[in-house]
Image (tube, rainbow, N blue to C red; front, side, top):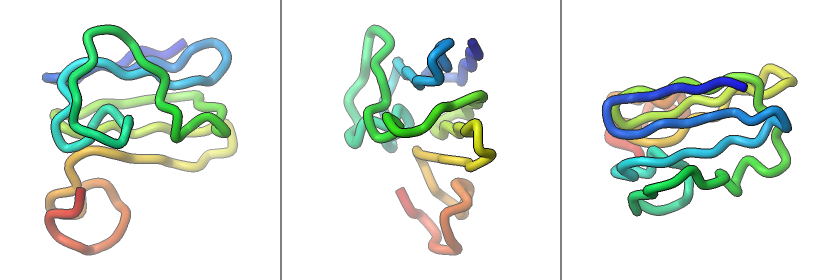
Length: 91
């Protein structure tokens, strides 16, 4: 298991490789497809087919590394900080 805590939210990788997040959902940093806050850990359904091995959180971002070495990111993409592409202010 891996636990990460940012200023406003937290994330965990369970023994089974599932990722759960909770806290303030601004900019979609929880990965649930919305900006809702979660008071308790909730599985990130978009990563159901991914076996995660590591997770890291920033102020409004979350990064997940899979067993295969793929990196997934979600949250505030300002200044292209998510690494998706060079679009500024992407979310």
